[in-house]
Length: 285
Image (cartoon, rainbow, N blue to C red; front, side, top):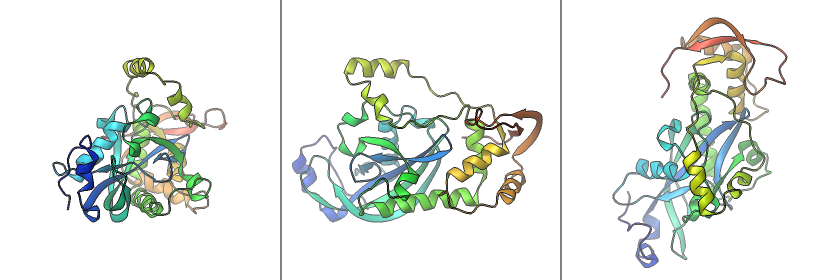
C-alpha cells in the first residue's frame, strides 16, 4: 500500500509529485501514566498524534519505531503494549510541501512502560513539525477542555478504545506495569517548562549526556495500586466493579502474596493506611 518516497530531506518537489491519495502514514497515539492519570502525546497545534510518512523502503512498524526513536530517550524499552487500531483516512500535511492532501493512516496505540515517557530535549524545535509534541491529560480532551482537529479526533478515539478494550480483556497488563514501576512519576502542569529550560545546543547536549535510563521496579505491588491504575485508563464516570476487579487480578495466577504491607506509590501522604503487598511472578518485557 505504501508508495515510493524520497527521504524527507529530499527537495519538496519530489514529495509533491506523489499522488496525495496514495500517501501512507504511521499515526502513533502514545499513552503514559502519570500520577494515576492517563496522558497522551499530542502534536502542537490541532493535528493530533505524531505522524510520519511511510517510505517505500520500510514498513509501517518501522515508521512507528522511527517516531518513538525521535521522541523518546529510551525507545527500545519504551513500549509495554502496542496495538494496531486499523486504517483510517485523514488529512495530512506533507513535510516540505505547501500542499495538503488525503492520506491513509494506520493508527498505532502504544502504552509506554512505567517512567519511560521522558522526551528528548527541545522537541518544540524539532525539524519535522509533526514531531513537535507535548503530553496532554486524556481527561482534558474528553471533557472538551483541550480541542484537537475534528479530522483526527476519531483516530484518537479509536486508539483510546483499542487501549481500553485491551486493558479490560487483559488486566494483567496493569500488574505488569506496576511490577516494572519503581516510583510513581508525578504529573507536571506544563511539561514544556522543562523543555524550555534547555534552549541552547550546549544545554541540550549536556542534558542528553547526564540523563539516565529510569530504574525498573522489583516486581512488588499492591492491589490498591492496581485498582488505581486500572481506573486511570477510563473516564471518571465509568462504572467499575472493584471487588470483581480484585478477583480478576488474583485469578491471573501472576501474583504471590508476601508477608509485607506497603504504602501506595504516589499516595504515600494521602493514604493513611497500608496495603498488602504481592510479588508479580511473570516476566515483563
